[in-house]
Image (cartoon, rainbow, N blue to C red; front, side, top):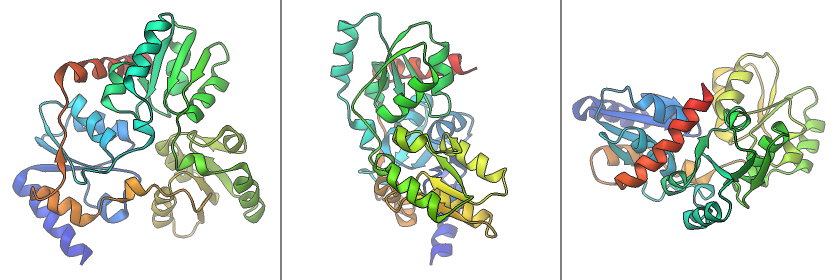
Length: 303
């Protein structure tokens, strides 16, 4: 059944000149038919060089919006319209704009996991892998970091010369992991390396052998022979287990499952390619340009 749908999708890709982009948290059957796969920003950046004029993003809305921001001339499709990210939508852009007016000396740093409207009122975007480097290179001392207070705390610890203010936002999935979970799992699996995403709470991150982005976690795991406790979405543990069946990759918590990322399935992809479901991403041009400025500044400071 799965292979039959995959074959139909591959045929439609050729017939309709569609490229499929899949975030690393997607299920293996979707990753297998993707033209590009990886972190959200990597997908957006790499998609710019694709020859296809129609891009289908398997992930959540803010990722599709970032693809459209960088490739406005292309048609960007989200297979499931209500595939959203709670963290990306936790803050009202009007509140951030008001904060900027009241604190003109403060620069706003937006995690790339935000809506286009939030990026548009920010000075620079960051990814989880580039946040520390970019903030450390900024001239401003006063920083408002949005929306993830956990990633913001991670940056604050690594940029002690900056005055970093965080908003009360978080990834509901990573934020559920507790220090108790960590201590219990480390006791149960002695000798396992603990790799965590900095969207986890600081008291979780402090126990990690490595803290970094999804791509960083995958890279670390692929370049060691150790068994791993995986402190990010369970899909990463599943991916690594398929690649290295002789090793153990144990999710740090059973709660590390993002239902929004898992809402998209192969049938959704197939139907969206036929125009039977999903939605096309539309962004008002002025908003897109402002959001792109924040992304361009991220690229400049990250070089």
